[in-house]
Amino acid sequence: MFTLFLYPCCLSCKHLAYRQHCINASLSVSCTPMQINLISVGNRMPGWVQQGYDEYAKRLPRECALVLKEVAPGKRGKNSDVARIVRDEGERMLAAIPQGAHIVTLDIPGKPWTTPELAHAMQRWLAGGQPVAILIGGPEGLADAAKDLAQESWSLSKLTFPHPLVRIIVAEQLYRAWSILNNHPYHR
Image 1 (spheres, rainbow, N blue to C red):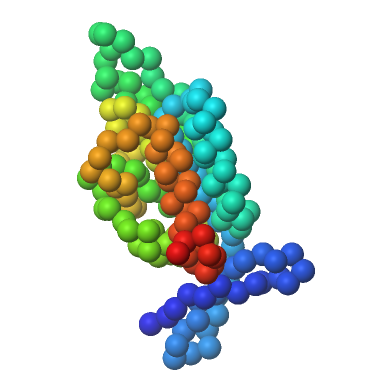
Image 2 (image 1 turned 90 degrees about the vertical axis):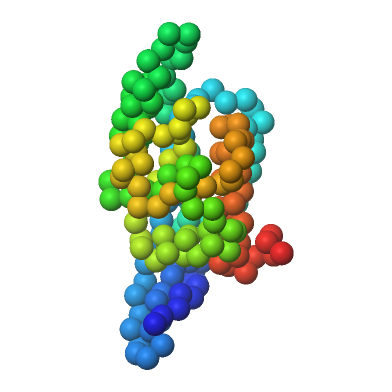
């Protein structure tokens, strides 16, 4: 059994790293900083969406950077082939995922995490030392190919939210989870 603790790995640059401390042995493993890629269908969002997302993304340290990757939505019309559009969006999403990333889908049937559970998930991601890709689908959801590659599926709520608002909610919750892990007063 082991616990994860935060330690400054470099006092001169104040980088944060996670070390795994075994209770019964003196094994220590340092993990590298990670990048969380929020890969979302949709572009040309209103200014308030970008401003809200940016507010929380900039609060995260570069050791846990949040990067937005927008995927162009398919053209939808009265006689559109929605299945093909979703498939095409899925292919563009998969192309945006960094190599070796831990993939998490945002999906209604996913697991509804509490904020402390999200903090625990973030702790696992940080300890893993690989990039994380969080996928947000378009109006019709995620392509099956994206769902099939996911190691985890997260449900924000059983409610339906506007896709632009989801970006802000996810960014805020990731910052809140980080603040829990770092005993920051933001989460009380």
